[in-house]
Image (cartoon, rainbow, N blue to C red; front, side):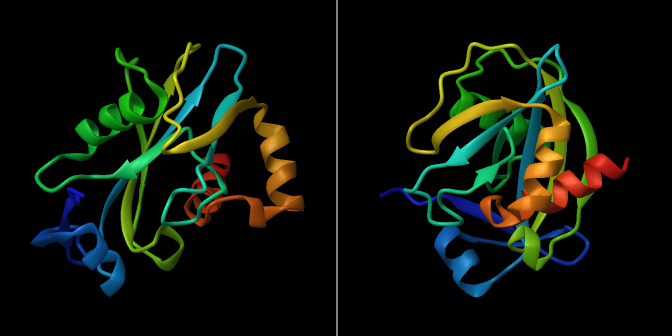
Length: 166
């Protein structure tokens, strides 16, 4: 298996090294990720249910598209790549940077840039990454998170709280 390489970053999100994915996770080192919230014209957000094959938080509901920033890659390029790899969106709509989260236990020690875009589909979900997905009204997500937060990836719980408080 050709394992991914990620940049290791310090508390200011400055690159201080480079390691394999498994080592960064095993050691709990800070690294980078992106999350994209895709909305349709009706204002619904697309959420994905993570594949059971995922090594982190399998089977939980997560952002529309999310993933690590590869070594040497910037956040914006990673967001476009994740839309392509996970949702099959090969001509991504313009992405809007919403906010950045500091690395924390909730984000699995990832600095996270959160993006938003509008897209109607179609989408081709990558079965290695995503079990299924669906469109949800933001108010429905609010209620679902209140009633059953354990069904969501920890980063999305934080992202959604910050997003809705804006």
